[in-house]
Image (cartoon, rainbow, N blue to C red; front, side, top):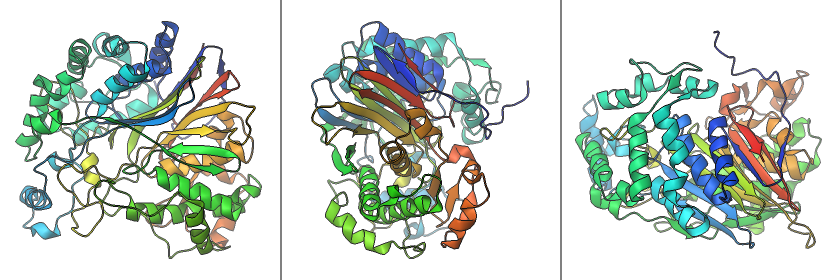
Length: 549
């Protein structure tokens, strides 16, 4: 069988509708897991946990128990809230300790004060939040217990499933990343990543999921699994201890929000980059970016410049709020002042990027669920970059995240590493009230766009597509995208320039334009409850689908 061409779009999808529930995610088998829970009496929160757990197995290239989880939601009784379950640096991970450890691991004779955070390895591992985040979601908002919700994932892991196209392509990275034998045994097959359609099992991961199903999340943080995680990290020169794991707790918190042309958009506050999306929306509204024709270079130019300004601010100020304050980045007043930087030509004096964060093209899974009770949930899981740090904890099958690589080793940087501190986090699930200015209408959506620094850029584009241009959900996700890169260039998809004029006109406006492949433009999911009508759409750049019933 010839390999699929992941860069071609030769078919169309419709927005999916369902009377009692809708699940949208990046892998069809995971969508089925969520639908099965809804059919069996679970609500949207139950389905979100079951779907997320299934994605740990059927899309292990982008998520896992060794990572973090976040949620934005609107409950049936109208509560809008957020859940954050991400751990921080180990208690012994002082700036000095980490610098010395990184220098010692280097192949070169390097001064510890000149070191940078590595992308992989033990120093990049922060405390995983996934298991306790799942458990909190089920206990606080669901109808079912965690043990029952993990059963579809356990079956996929132990009985097997065929690997889908995009996941197979992403899995190839594991052949180079995984060097230890237990990591290779957990995720490679005769030393190789699986091909498209190959049926695989992940028995070690399945056994860990079964242990958590039977004993609860404490089995991950306080039992034998915790001991194996700490042992794995320490054996590779890191500082993670069982005490670091046992001390971790998830949190429920208030989201941040702003209005955009009649809609209200809710995002996660710092340490996540939700304020970047809000600032970009405010600046775009201030300069009237959504008033230009959908296929015009002016639309791309003004939205992109609004995004660039927001990145410059957010990437300078956002980190763990318990360690650093930030200005009112999500306010209209701030946006009016920052909008003065934007004109008819690209502003090359505004740069962005968290230096050394390695966050530009991280990998993530996001899923969205709506039910007929009125719950809508945006749920996002990630190990940061693909399989994460390259470390798999003993025989658990749990690949550990490399979110700590987002820390800085510069003592003057707001995002510098400190014991217990949570790093700058790219993950941003979101909620939108499209009828915020209409007291007689209910129109809520849960959405998100995966992919490192693409996430807030995707939020801006998807929201504008729906609010400014009234596109159906699937069309709003299908539309070709743009994104700013850390190097200052403006990247676009090839499909954006059908008449070979738009890119030329953007270049005339001073943009350094480059064409990149579709996989770098995010992975969006969205569900909507519009006066009781449930609908959903999924990302054409991924393997997934939206399913309703």
